[in-house]
Length: 281
Image 1 (cartoon, rainbow, N blue to C red):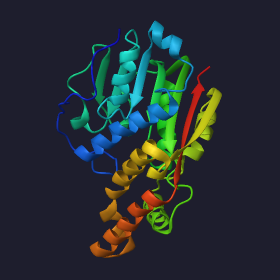
Image 2 (image 1 turned 90 degrees about the vertical axis):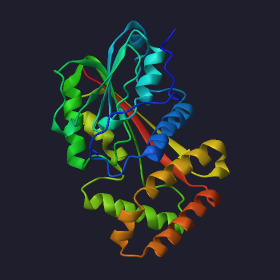
Image 3 (image 1 turned 180 degrees about the vertical axis):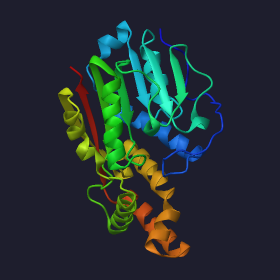
């Protein structure tokens, strides 16, 4: 029987400065990130795609990068109580102080280095960091994570493509401006398309990629409604930055977002998520 921690319980966090994430993290964003975890788990029927289930049963060392409030760590550690889980997170107020005995959480800016020796982990998991790293930073992070892997260990990544399929005109305008905002900061809204190249560049073998297309509209049922609202909450947090970039008034940006939200309810739009893993030989 696994740990009895429930992500629905109230969590207590330490306070700290914000990290590199361009969205200001508040209670709404914490709820959004936790909800996204459960949506991806339902859509993939698992918390990971790497072939490490039997190793997790036996007991291995696992690292989750950008662990946030620990939702992924809590979920997987409950299923595999013999394995040892470490989460690292730059926003220390998100670090849980109540945790299962086979987990630990560390305040760390991965861009400043990772406080572990090479060959420390058997499985490393990282996802949804598209709004956190520049292209060069992402490359550096992957290189460092590969160093942390033990031989025969797996690195698994998951990222969305922020240029959606079948966008309405308002949605396209919003996402085009978001792409421009990210590229001005040397960030890549389509970083998912580069993941395979990163894993190959740093010598990982047996690379397997799974691209899934997820709905963003209530026209496609409950998952579409939930993921669409999740996306709206993420992009809405950047509304002021987008208005400044577009040089438009508050009234104009609000009208644009009203049209954007309406389109998520009336047009079947889709987001591609890339899930990929590689093995260190």
